[in-house]
Length: 425
Image (cartoon, rainbow, N blue to C red):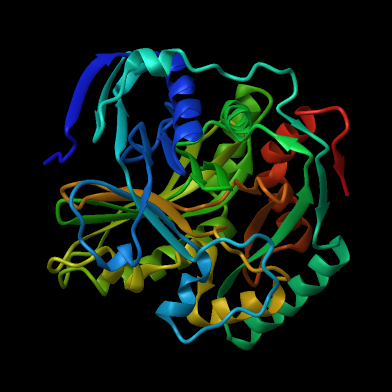
């Protein structure tokens, strides 16, 4: 089913993708771009899609709409699903949930040499091709970034969280720290291109909602639905890449054999099995892959795949209510973990550790986990990003702190290289 009035298949190129992004951002208030970055991923990453539109969709989680709908669910949507609240300061004013109906969809075929352009109004390839792309040397100026959590604060909270674990309050908790800052100018599309080049990821994405922008290099899928099969692929377990093939193989082997990392991964797999059992047919929940090791440009990750057969026709909202937020970004048990997150983190996560994705006309969908991502308010010229790791009883504070810095490395490098006068505090 396709409700677009105009459909045109045409030859395509990476340069046209860049021009289409600029053209869409110049002409539409809402733009979303999804790109798998040709990175190997179990069950594949996002489809290569560009959406643009003018019509927002209130309460879209619970409404079935014709055609595509595209949107994001922020972490604090948890407060609507559970008896929870957030008292921490909000760094940027993001809506908890935002979806739009696209009036333009560009589906870029594998290998990028062909595309299908679908729209409500007709779109001229000539118009897109005439779009001028910014070519200035620096894509940003005046960036100032500071960490919101001092090392001694992180170490102190780490010890307190482990006390909760010893008492049996939680088994695992994902504790995050944020970086905030300002800029005097920013070309967010060039920022996205630079981050994608530095850290190509299967759930790479770009979202523009008026003056609010998300730039994401996410490696993780939250939920994928095809027909009546629901798939989740939690990530727990991270290692840096080696400088040589031999060192890289050794690091991958070390991650694969780490009892600590496997224990963290297994806890979240069990949590996800429980969540999927709420919406799946009895006996249909399966772990298709446990502790898979996958290499990306910057890191090596441990990924597991859990599936179920949906019990009946459920709305997107029903499925999210049973599974959101993802266990990989909370810990277990989930409710208590979320209470402790609000206690020990010093910022409201906003869109960070939420889910961004798209729903197809056949009501299939794909959503990522919003991590390794940067959030921008283009009017207030403010920026933030956050990183975290899973704390367990046998976790070591220095290792967890270094894991957070590793996850922030690509973002920090891109921002630092963007200009000569960047400052990190």
